[in-house]
Length: 339
Ligand code: PMV
Image (spheres, rainbow, N blue to C red):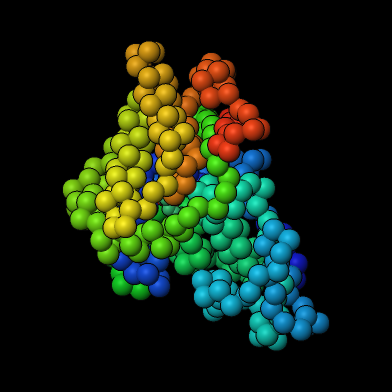
């Protein structure tokens, strides 16, 4: 058995087309509904984590983007504990202290799914250090829910599961990226500042106060999931685009229905959504779809053949200027082809 005492891993962010919002178990991070996402190519937006264990380290330590943070984060400690419980290395080495060094190559906590990449990367690197071979998506889930989907490339579904211990609340790949290689994502960074209401606080408040969330979970999400699976299976971009936008809109409606409201999209975000509808209407077909996470930044899904004209029009309609607070940049990104 080979043993590694230093491991470096990278993990890309994933963008949900059917959103996860709300937990039925806060501690275990079991969601109220299934979700579906696309994992982006690791060439662009990803987390990079190096982990080392050594008998010479005096204490456990973690650095995020070059700054030392407290290791006493319950979710982080949970991930380390859960991986160690499945570890297949000598018991002496389980006692060695750990150093974790993680960085993102994109704005952290700006509603760009940074925690999905961060925790997926952390748990993946931990699994290599401690020689854990089994499915680790349920452990990544306990770091940050959406992280379980970044364990896989391509199109991924996270199942709510029915067990109270969360052991069947796992992510599985629906299709590899090679199934739909023309798919592209353009990220429009509207604002890279840290969001005001974290997804943890926002979700908790939504579950406690929004009646619309319960309507969404009971009557809408499963229909969105079924149609999204069909769209991906048949590479039907029209259906994919419509359901992606409807689900994003419903997620933000639920956030507005939260009391006090959790507001993530700003005027620029709404202008982008209107632009997308007008662009599709002018083409008389679906060329592009928007989705917004818990922040103002837009993720646009489109097909490779549409990227040049779309980027050209975006730069005309939303000119980038260093002097304004909100700014927009976009790069076309492939979907990740991991298995
Ligand atoms: O995993 P969290 O706690 O960062 O929550 C992510 C929530 C959304 O990004 C808004 C939706 C999703 O499914 O990724």
